[in-house]
Length: 120
Length: 400
Image (cartoon, rainbow over all chains, first blue to last red):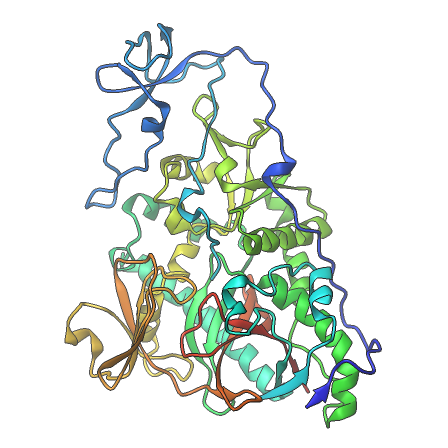
């Protein structure tokens, strides 16, 4: 049995390693609001009925060919009406319009490893 | 290769914490009396063994690239469960060679038989901080005692990971736009691995920014991923597996914008981090001394090719999850886990078991770290059973 607790003097060093303190990633950042002109972005079903945004962010389902089944829920950009689920979106379209800022959706990555690490 | 019992430094917890390793004693291991960072022992190698292991890893790197080329040339993506919509981007990235950083081969080695490749963690390897920094600091402190108490002389360590990472960041910096984002989960090990990698990038002169994977935003109007300040993300290191990203909601956006961004590791690493690369390697290099026989599991006896001692692994399993170990046709160990889908079978390698001070068996697995294409260091995870998992201890090493 060797005793590593004695004679701890520094020997020849071929490198010196520096390690940052642990960084709490999300806590260090704050969300700032943009100053661009905003336009409505609503999640709708195939009848343009407004539904919860989470339905547009559902996990895509894979088809047997390796592609994705299209999500029946899509974002509807611009137009009139309101954000209430059940209301009808009209006057807009399914493509974002240049020059307008749309809400940024988050949470589309990272949900699969909730509560556990990715280590290997 | 020898396992040597050694007295831990009396204040080893504070020592390893001071260099960033806060998860040295997880609660899940408390009942066993073991710790994740375990300096009650170390492994000793000869310089010749280290040279041989380094050469084996560099050879495996070349062979793995050839195996990836085989997958691409023969369109064998289905066997690896690669989604069809990722294939054009894998092939594009394979040719364009966007920046890649690191990976870790896991080898079985017992000091006498040739080292055998178990798998390649090419996309999201962890235990990096321990390998690059913590075990180096350990050696700096214990080497006088090692030298005084044995024939060792001045012990050294196979470990230039830190310098190589900084050098690699400098090498790829011209291809990146700053800040380089570092994204991962909120798990301590992942966060510390990211913090360490972020530190190496900073030391290479790159400005960096951390972000949680969950906080990455997608803005349809700008057709871009955004940080929490609504700034566009261009260059991003993600400690998050590609195969998982491609099952999540932002997958179509990541694929649609892949060519306009810089993701590290690049998407072609999906080919190497996949256990399916092992049967491809065996096809290309049958009976290579550093390989174990491996085949895609067809759920019948034909895929065993007469093997009676083997391991069955899912293509994407991590940390020893969902493993079945078979000896003489009988299952002797299984592990639970969330991974299903296609599997491979891989022959059991030669026994690599070393007794601890109490005479109990310990099963080491050697991690050989690749910085881009070159091997630059070694680490050892040790288990009380033959399956390495997330409760396997990290044991430092030296060579003489």
